[in-house]
Image 1: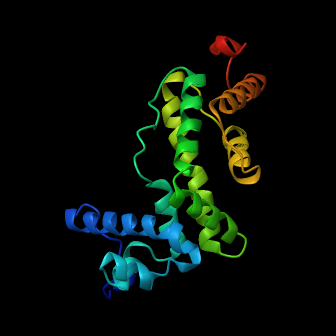
Image 2: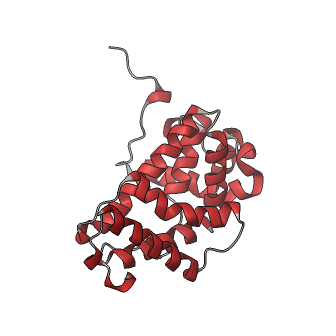
Length: 205
């Protein structure tokens, strides 16, 4: 069997040198994206600024959608990511605030809008968008494990949808009060569907 072409090999992330290179590239991309926009973030520019070859970029990210995917999910540590817990209201509230704070980062905000805008005509972006949703729901369900509650895709959308609508469509602020209202309505829906027994959220009754 012939060797795998270089451009199709997956980077060995267990290699510290490879991981450092990857981290440096993402850092440079995060700095460039708000400045030049998605169209301006070419692999030629990124390779020049990160001091790597374009071949290196393609080994890590075969498409620009893959790069944007990692920029979104591997954003800077803002110190606000919630911990697992048995209180569904507390976990959901902390998770939404973390989502809001993450999108406040200019690079993440630009990347999210770019992937969403390209999804209708770019299969890679469409797949990235689906994977982002699946990844975030899995992460939330992991946080909810101590409560025994696991949510469906529809229930996930009902939680984050109002916050994204407020930020991207209304161009407004997702205040703590707004998030509290969203979570209260979401918990009511979960109780109506039987996902959350009414006795599991006395604070929301």
